[in-house]
Length: 395
Image 1 (cartoon, rainbow, N blue to C red):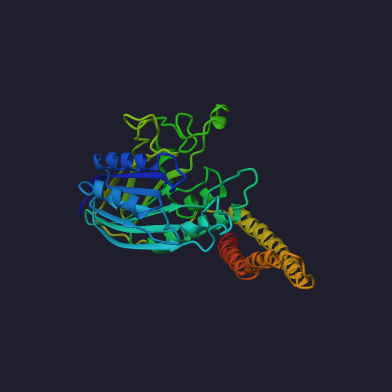
Image 2 (image 1 turned 45 degrees about the vertical axis):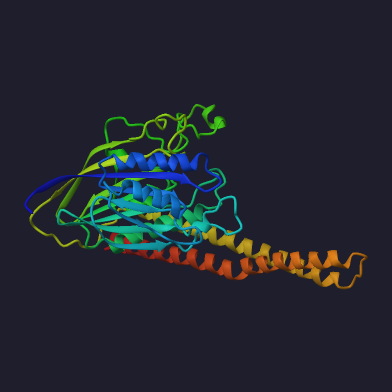
């Protein structure tokens, strides 16, 4: 194919499809499906589609324009990530992150989703496109972020996964809710380690930036709207060409109207984004050698410091869980030295305390070991990259 020049249109949206929690979920899923069924997208990446029934609703609705689809099953609830394509999906893979929050944080729920990064390889016009979609751990409190180290691990792991799986690809696209803002360490890892371009930064037409907590979104809390400040940009389309393939941005925009037609509600608590990419492929194949990373010493040193802080916190948690376990065991043993009037009540209390103690024991041992090993493994990988850079600078 000599100088083949074509456009490829990407769409991504966090659908906010949490059962029993998300407002107007059923109506919004139907509206999202109906809209996608009439739009000429080449690939659609959705996040937070948490139930099979919602996935099937969308799949059946868009089958005419997006006949190929894949849902990445993972964890207890499923990853929530799915991809719909106009073109054949020839292979898929899901890489689950080793750290995904905490099982006891029921009100957050990230752990139950078994989050990770999904890959769909698409055959298009004689080229192989690697479509990655991910949904990183949520940031619940930016000022005091207990999941910061977890998200840095996920971002670093995501960048490594893309680099290790894209050797045969002509085009790389990462789309999804990355739960980080431009400039964050997590953002920098995913962009600079992979040399991906951020479609929003490339576009020049002044399209608004916020993709979450937008002031016009009906689901943005009133308390935030009263501040009169823009929400964060945490949803992205990132891209690059490989081999002899050039990729340039034609258009970036937020395609959905502020309200679902005929309803006074938004499509989601996030904003959808689309990027139209012009893909030009020459007639000479160039071997795709190791991707040249752009990260520097300071970025790696910052990551190592985050891992050290995370390891320190995990060690503190271990001590706390051990103390709680020992105290509970002492109370349970002590209860057998007394014969109160309500023995049945005491038996129930012993059972409850035993359950709690079993949980804290697991958190102090197995769970703590998983966290420690994951953080330490990521730190070692960062140090290897750091040493490589230092050796190159000294040679």
